[in-house]
Image (cartoon, rainbow, N blue to C red; front, side, top):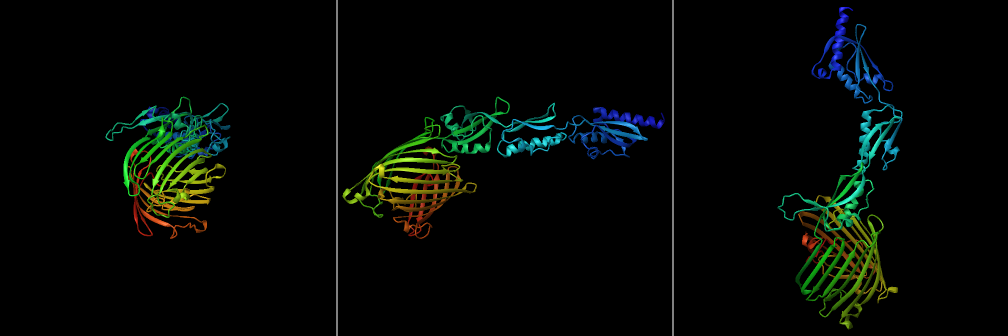
Length: 588
């Protein structure tokens, strides 16, 4: 062997030692005067040799360098086609060195098989993948494919879905194993927050609360065994929140006992559901009155509601009692019963807006209503009512009294985010009331009532709200069952029952602003009228309607339960009269 060949052999041995000794390779670089005279690839059958050599920086005519060769080995491996580390061998060739990169290719995919997928078909998942049948497996593409599959699930709301394995079996099939996030169980956790505002301790969580677990879970369409989807859960949480029992509702996902399963935990913070009160008031119309009230919206933790109210003294002697059962059967049939007896003196209605000193009215009645959902946002109701009205002195006002028997059918769609203080969504209702006939009573007539409400979030804490109500009646309608306008809940700026008729159109517009905490304000405008003839009706809020505008404050007092205390100052457009109204809850 010539001296030159001996030097070349020694240089290649040193390079091989550097390449095959990791500790040495990390700390030192060996560079020689040996020139690369050829570069080739061994073991590549499916991958084009040019694609491999395109990432190689060592070049024919350059000097051998361990650093460059090590980088070349890593770059070749990073192409993703190879199952083992790429190796390099050196041999003398034409007075220089021949570099051979030796690779072991991944298998060619025989088929792509998806395990555990039920949400999407194999064809839908296959479209997301770069790895295809009869192509060599590329680990880079596979990682991208896994991300694409998971992103598809997540973007469609399946946030618990994961690809838990991707492997080649003995038959060279690529198996993609997917855990879609099956709900093993649904649990309820009750978050307890200290009532002391200065308490800095973290809220505690309990397995039990006032509300029964089934009251919460029965509102949910999603059930154990379903695949968890946060988009489908949104409506369920909205229904739970709209029960009115909770200050906060949210969920978390815990791992289940079985692979690919989760436990869905619904965390609720219970609020005040019961209230009792007493008090007294005075007005020029009613004199000095006192009242006692009791309300419980979650009786015994079963979502049952009971209301009782008595008002006495002055020109009023009223009693009202109501009971509501939300679930009578598995089809979510609801039932409500109310009985009442009211006494009033010196009312306006039926007397063309005049107040008379000797007018007295007693109303006693009973009604019951049953409802059932027909879709996720729509319910139908049927109700029956008996009411007797007695007016004295009878010889003067006999046309104002009598008895009525009616049945009412209603269809209602409600997509509001929070029914007690909505910021988005809509409420549409249509009801047809049939009186008399085979039902009995002193009067035969029909009433159709249409109502639509809309809520538009303008920006944070700002909501534009609107309501339109249309009433149409025909037949022998008694004065005590006219459509009435005026007062805190219909046409502000005017007295209660100031306008009445067998036809009605009403518009209400409010711009609500949350100021801070439980305090909010509203700018409002009302317009409406009542007529006796359909030919007189006007549907645009112009001069043919009574109009008002004003400003109001709303203060939510937890002790009063759901809904704020409402104070509205209204000014009429026609004669600039002003009136202060006091009420509970939003007008609509």
